[in-house]
Amino acid sequence: MSAQRPRIVCQFSCGAASAVATKLALAQYGATHDVQIINAFLANEEADNRRFAQDCEAWFGRPITVLRDEKYGADATEVFRRERYMKNQYGAPCTKILKRRLLDTWKQPGDVMVFGFTAEEVGRFEDFLERNPDRPSIAPLIERGLGKEDCKAMIQRAGIELPLMYRMGYENANCIGCVKGGEGYFRAIREDFPEQFEALCVIQDDLGSGSYLFRNRDTNVRFSLRDLGEGPVRRNEKIPSCSFFCEMAEADIIASA
Ligand code: SF4
Image (cartoon, rainbow, N blue to C red; front, top):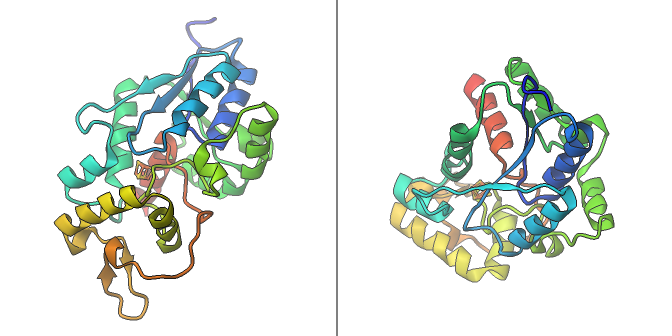
């Protein structure tokens, strides 16, 4: 293996797309480059994500390096409590602190980042490349025209059971009660995970209206999760999966807007 070759860095987020992107990057670069697979442990993810990571590790034939935040106990709710907000126009503090900061401590100049953007997300990847011409990046799923459903099918054909969140009908394996979710998603979380839902309500009770995620469409007044009314329950609501790199891409897009 040549020392001059850059590291190929795959971010594995316990989602189907990042798993397939990692597998493809290993197939393409595994014999010639130093391919690293990294994952940020999050205390708020459903427990079956860890089983999925282990199964994928066996599928990859390579170890996954698990990074874990110490300051906040890798816990998004602890971030909300201590940073005193849950989401603002620059995004969610949990992904920034528990994922991006960890990556910053680990990355090396010249690393080539492997994005798990799917064929449906080609626009997001193009935006990222345009704004980051000096940041080497590849998107194996887009190169091969693979969509989200293709990735799920490939995982299943490899004999790996998808994480429980997918099997329950959710769009991805993000934290339980991901703050990027909409009203329909949170109605589903309220039904399926009442304890985690209540924990987020308690945080909003403490932080007040500045932390509320939703607005009443008629009055434009913000309201808390506790006041979320009845309505459509949407487990499959489209929420961006949470990764080091997607967050980075979104932050760059917002910063340059
Ligand atoms: S999955 Fe959602 S709640 Fe969890 S760290 Fe990412 S943005 Fe935050």
